[in-house]
Image (cartoon, rainbow, N blue to C red; front, side, top):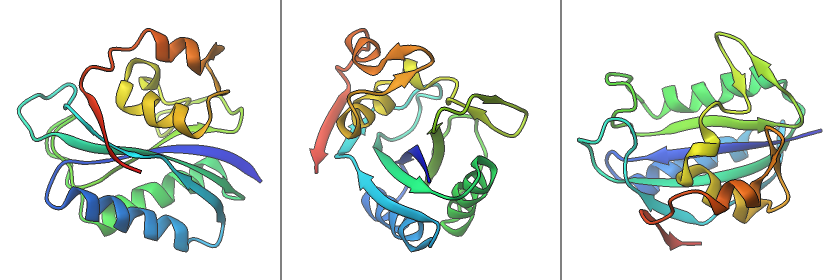
Length: 159
């Protein structure tokens, strides 16, 4: 079993329902076990700023899926919940990203692990540190990464 971490976010429609629907789909996969979910956080958009605020969470799982099979599951959730990719970093009903997959380092056209921009983003690191405050990401302790992030625009809405 591999321990993996995912980031989920939504800023279209009923954001909480979208996240819960995605979690239910993840939880129904027989090759995904021991799922732990962070608190839910409201966050400002990054990149394309002319859009509604996001609700973001992090999820820890154990899985027998390969990293590419897990990517297929994540993309399947996005498809099932009808995500449309119109504007890069634009509004989305659901976004499901693989952050970490065990100790895997992978850089391909289809999948990069660790997620290439995760250490720059409070909306990823804040919920992630809640799940595991001892993570090492790209050779850096998550507590060190956390220290230097601007956390002003991230607000816990509930656990």
